[in-house]
Length: 283
Image (cartoon, rainbow, N blue to C red):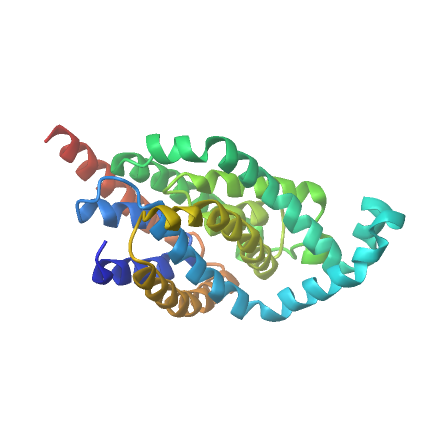
């Protein structure tokens, strides 16, 4: 894949990773436009690593507090047990909730990820999933929690059940066309979580998810798959810069309760992808 195309995909990734419109779905559709028939999973993962840098920069204070809390709590794990550790420090408790929320996507990815990449990435299927994604955004965006009509629960009030439900929603984002941020923020809002904390938990949850996917896929570098390493690194840097700007913008959108507006975009792109995908298949 040429450097110019990778940089174009990097900008697309940076813009769409944090907007609830499915970056992986957009990457697949853009690749199809340029005649790339097979999903470029390694390229996608490297661009996701770039946007991961943006998440860590924006939430660097929360990440630092979580890491420090885990170090302090490590020595108490045996004596306190799981329940005691959850009650010890808010940051340690949050870290465990993030791990619990990561588990569903990890299980689905390890067991079905390769199959889903082979069977469910045709443009018309991506369009279908975008329609579903838009519907979820529309329903969640019109909820009372999203509109700020009632006080939502704060991050420290999340339960293991909440984390697991949000984690299950994240696992559906393995389907290209289903937004990871859109599904997790939407489900958190439907669970009654306050708007900004729903976004915070969603983006903190993306850190282990992206790292896990990258760990599995970076092995392809040794076999010469994908693009050249230098091009991938430049693409990741571009995605990081654009992603940082997009994340800042999305946080403002969530604060103002305008999540449902993205539904119309997803429906439009989804319908276009279905029509063009099916027309191309007949041709």
